[in-house]
Length: 120
Image (spheres, rainbow, N blue to C red):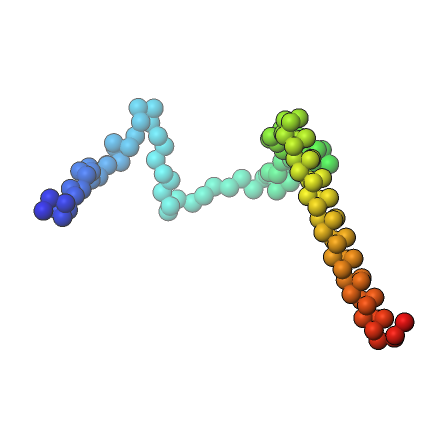
């Protein structure tokens, strides 16, 4: 059965590169020998090594990022806005009617229970 045979592995070159073959025509610097001592210039203080990077104002960064995010927003068309507004108003009216009906039913039930207990 042909589909049970293992697939052939791709042929990769496993040739080991010598140090000479890694050099470019411009000549790369060879890595420093780890046994060589590291020469440090002690005349430079730490303060001179650091560079002051100005901090960005948080408010200006917030405004810039907000403007960037507002550019990404896909705004609805006028027709979509009207359609969605009408859906919201319709659902709100339907829910208001439902709550009014439930409130009326429970109010009448409570009134009947109170009248039965007190006998008014």
